Length: 629
Image (cartoon, rainbow, N blue to C red; front, side, top):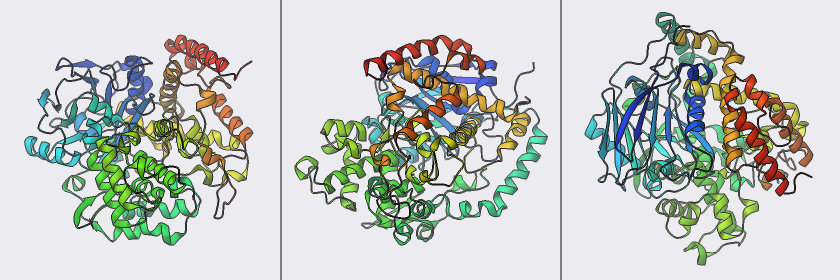
């Protein structure tokens, strides 16, 4: 069988403990089964990061993985970042767009792996000529923006830079990696993994050519067709005009906003409008040069310029930033929230986890559960913009109450010994800005997601509220959506350049030369999810307990058109829907661990022994917890 097109088959491995690097060949069979990007990263992490590994130790590894569409198909701009999360102790993937992934491919590599840890601060310069491990002592302490600008000055403007800020250096458990000033691989604390390795930044010089596709002329014609479609179709007009900034209007109307720490999913339209669409667009400015030079046909990124407290700044807001730093904290001052977004990016903080954790503290203050003596300064509760700004800085500095909040909302509630019932997370990962009490079956996605509370793990194909019927009935559509989303992550496609799913096999054939049906392509993320679940079970996960949702979501909405509606019809509805997901996936329907025969069906029988061991481990934990007779 001829080799697949569209890959270099080159993995670049850098060991920071020794300062040495080498290039390895990626196995063709791995590419056939796991495609690339997200799914391939899970395979590599499963093999190389043993369960029980300390996420902040040199033994953890950091993967930057591209898919076969990267630099070859319009809109294929994403790179997957993978490591064991310091926040959840689970294997965790996050994704960032624009240039890092395509430049890595042009440098001649499909995957970059960073392992070990440096004694002193360093950064990497990656090009087609190889790797330089360079001194970063002068960069340590700088913000992500300052670091990026300095490295562009040193290496030329036409490079892509991934950097951590002070939060990553200080091992904040939800520190992020920021790419090219604005794009973040935000979730799971992967910036803290970089910080633990004393790795300040990675500079990638895209000075070569991408890999050759199997059918270059046909792919070029197909790419031009779809580029023109996405750039002109009325279907994407709202995205081209607003990006994701108009979403608070929608989430507030359908009872899915995170307002006031998920206390009020429905909020008035005039309040939501303060942080949405037209209000943000009033401040819009021309994007920087690298957006004009990109290959994205939608170009949904909106850049704005604002002034807050006399400081003029530029930022690229998104719905999650606006909703979690604004609505969730009860702050609806547009300029203040945009400034929080800029500040979080500069400090290298995940805006979702930071917003959720601060919102939780504000609710504690609102309820009289914490006071000035513990916080260190007066906190009024929701809407206290001064407190939000101050807390962002304290978290990044790990100073005072910030040292507690830097641990994430789950650990913070345990450290303080209160507020656990108000902490909105799944498996330790703070929830994103979509309350599932407005969408039937969405809570099943949150509960069963391998990484914890993520809105990128599949949405049920319904717009009905949870009160419309059993959640079990929409689980199959959520599972299909999960596969589809994960396949796009494996191909390096952006979710907002939404090629019809039926077109993906054709594009895959033009790139790789291989014929695959859509269902066959969907097996790649199914394999990755099975490995992630086995790894988690061998580490610490007890699915019957940890596949759950926070108490707030099991309570009815307090106001609005969905008043009284919870995420499920009740406990029985929740457990049956989760069991239905287990059954659909071929997992043990009580213990939630992949069955050995399922791995054989998926073509990864080599992991069946691990699955059997994981089943025994989880059964023992379940018996010890009194869940089994």
